[in-house]
Image (cartoon, rainbow over all chains, first blue to last red; front, top):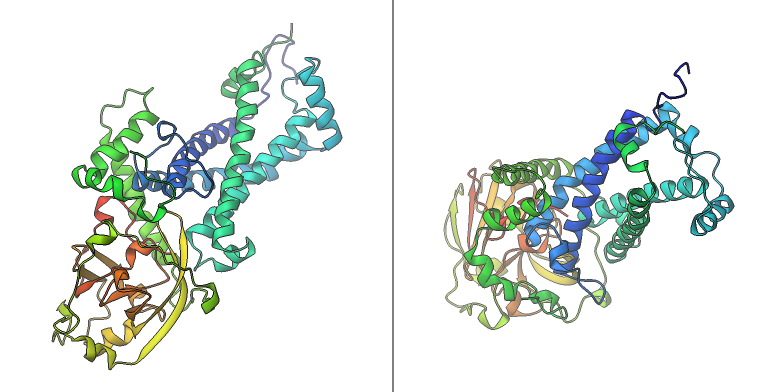
Length: 205
Length: 246
């Protein structure tokens, strides 16, 4: 491109930025209302702290959950369609290397990983693909427990209603585990959070 | 204030008194909305409530569209029946209504040609069928049970109900009430159940439909009515999604 060396270049396309933040809002609502729904009949020996849940009580939480699911699904579909059609996935996610991802993680833990703005490193590639898959599993298992009669083939494929509830829980757990690392890095690595809003990397110095 | 975890079936109990006193939309949703949007200058938080209600109505329509009148719920074997079957109501087990079967009469009203009340022996004289299906509670838990009684479609035809009407409503002896859409009422597995594990699950008459969540299966039914005016329901009026199809 003809931009001067001091002109910041777009590293996050507008479509990716918009769907990222819409998704962030949808996931936030889905997880916190989901915790409240979980509390109505916990499958494991604990409950989520009430103050970290959304909806006030079960009906409120369900209303949020069944409203935000449309946002999550439609926005996610738009993101996947864009990623596939525009070449964004091909350019940003390929090649994938599990070995490379481990190497990057160890480098990062020793403070040696150089973050190149605008380019996903091997660990980012693997974790972004993993979290996209986790969201897809969450949506499918959510449909399976929402409609165990109308979508009984899907429910059966997940091992039945009770098994699908657990799949739904672990998909959530995977997403939350990703978020802990993702948000932790986003706020601690200098300069990258702003780029997710503006799309621009700081000019190299 | 926490419901006892081990008593998932009675998870509502400790909250009932509170729930009864407060309006779901005024407090439940608004608190959630405010905590969600606390960073914004949200002047009219009712807008969030209205949006959620509108989306719940939208979800009613989507579920009605998704509902396949000929798709049957999976059935199970007797060995798979959940024992003991969980008791769940908006009150405690000791407060169930005690109904005398001899003097009991099922009342009919609304868009029904023959509104003559029915005794239990008359209902038992109709063809009976049974089903072993999974009941899914809005709270998330599920249980497999066995129910026997009159196919609801057969009963509605027999009493000359207007099958083109939109709703079938139920008034119960425990002051519970609910309503379902006509296509679900006519589903082959929708049963006016006379026989079930124990009287506490709705003696002498309850609705059993595996195509909807548990709270859409009213117990201790005293009156059935057919109408085109949205009748709501006990939990539905507090904020649960009305269609609540499975």
